Structures are given as C-alpha cells and as structure tokens.
Length: 153
Image 1 (cartoon, rainbow, N blue to C red):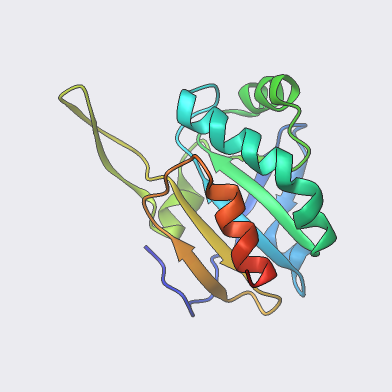
Image 2 (image 1 turned 180 degrees about the vertical axis):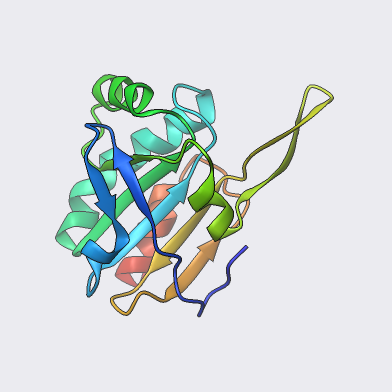
C-alpha cells in the first residue's frame, strides 16, 4: 500500500455515466479516493451513504470525492441513482488502479480466499501527494473521520 508522503498514482477511469475521469484533471486540487469492495453490499452502502451526506461539506472545503471499486459502469449508475450519490464513482474493472494504490489483495469470506479490494481511503493534496492514509476502514463514521482530517478537527 502506498504511504503518506508518496505521490498519488495517476488514474484514468470511467465514471457512472461512462465519462473518462483523469487524476491529472485535479492537479492543484485536494481529493479523496476511497476504495470499496462492491456496490450494494451492506458496508459499502453505509460508506457511500455517509460520504453522500457529507459531500456538501467536502465540496465547500474544495475537496473532490472519488469512490472506486471493480464494479462496472452500469452497476455504478444503478448504485449512484439508488443511493443519490452526488460525488464521482469510478469503475476499475481490471483493478489496475487498486493495484497501483496497493489495495488489491487476498481476502477471506466464509472460509473462502479470493482477491479483492481492501477497503482503504487516501487523501491527496494539491501537489498530488498523499497526506493521509486510512487502511482497513470501518464504514460507519468513516466519512466524518475523513472530513475531520480535512477540516483540521
């Protein structure tokens, strides 16, 4: 996993509308990248909803929020519509960006091992440097935790 002080990896992914979003478009701006396992799962729904509820505060602070999973664009569109998500969901179907950030790895569920996204969040400053890493995120209260870091609380 990349660390605080590292340059954030560049990315170029499709959003829920199929538009290409590039990290380079956010040069000179702060942004949050949160990686989550799957649309419509309980923990991911909690996390997405809390970021949606706090999004106006992120926006007021000049911070863009990106949620990234390996779900496809169509799944993201349905998830964004159902959850009324106002921020950008990005599709990383081959986990290329998840691998660049170091959040792709072995997981276990009901005794089965598989590869998947480790729920993690990265805060990136105007110079493209990671200034805060949240590994092994617990969904409940996480958006408020991130917002507190950004606002200096």
